[in-house]
Image (cartoon, rainbow, N blue to C red):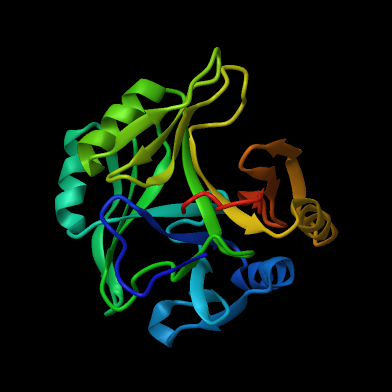
Length: 261
């Protein structure tokens, strides 16, 4: 278990949120799936929901911004002490700023960008809202990974912007590394299989006490299985989409410590 009440160190995946056509429907889906308690913000929050486990924020749900034509999706936010400075680094390193830094009431400052391979991510500069206050517990985030069609270029990009260092786990055709800014792994970055018909993306993993049980509940609620459950040294995993098409992953609790989120 990880509990935290202060801002996460720069470069750490510190928050995730879901953009959907129908936040109320998403609230019902994830509350049934993970037991989330969803708290609606003030009117100026625009219908954004803060989702909690044991009274601690773990994720957000909100309506799509802009035209609404984009698919429903989970977004990973990386912590920054200065979102405006990070925006400059993103542009200089070959990324694209999709939404310039802006203040979100008095809770923080955010921006949205893509890396050079096209994966969308957010940046969060904490104020009153420090990000996830619980990780590595059922219903909370346990891992975030960037899956790319340009593994080497993306490693260079995230190093330039966030100072990531990498511990390579590659073997044969499998190309994957964990990233860190100090001694602890913060997430992963990998190469998509050439035959995979999916764009570069960030993927959020939620902890499951039993991956198979959560998969069963998700499908009963109208979700879809993207990749059936499989066993790994880090826990039993599965990739799903919810009933509005947003993709997320599960990681079952393995014996010993779960992966850092």
